[in-house]
Image 1: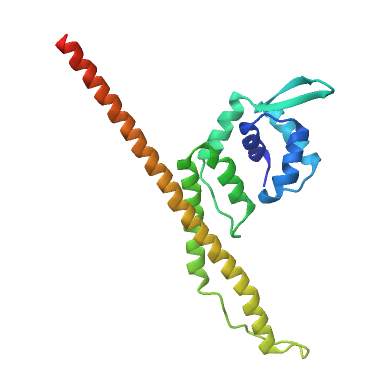
Image 2: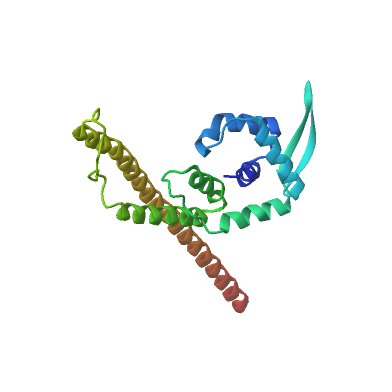
Length: 213
C-alpha cells in the first residue's frame, strides 16, 4: 500500500512539516498499517512535491528552527478527489488496512463517498462469508505419530472460530456504519429540501410583493 494518498489526505486537513507528519504516524500510523519510520515519510513527501501535488512553505518560528510546511496544491487536491471518487477494490483479507485508509482519507471528502466505500466492503465480505460455507470443516489427515488427530481437529476449530467471530463482528460494524451513513445522507437531503423550499417560498413572496406594488 503506497502512502501517497494517505499523506495527501492528512495534509488536506492541515499543513504539516515532515516532523509533524512523522509524529502523527507514530501515534496513528498503526491504525493504517504503517510503521513509525521517518524515511518513508520524507521520501513520500519528496515524491508528492516532485509530482506537483504538494507545495512547501518555509515558516519562521521564534526560538525554533524554521519549519517547512507541506500543503496540497490545486493539482494535489484534484488528485485526492479523483482517487476518492475512484472504484474501491476490497482486499481478500478482512480488516485490511487499505480499507480503513480509503474510508478515512477518501471518505472525508463526503458522506456519499464514505457510504460507497462501506457498501462495497460490506457486499464483498457478505459474499465472502457465504462462499466460506461455515466456520468449521473436517480435516483430511495422514498425521505423524506424535499428533493426536482428534486434538488437531479441535485446534483447527479454535483457530477458525477466532477468525469467524472477528469477521462476524466486523460485518456487523459495517452494517451499522452503512445505516448510520444512510441516515446522514437522508438528513442532509431533507435539510437541503427544506432550504430549497424556503428559498422558493421567499422567491414567491418577493414576486407577490412586486406584483402588488
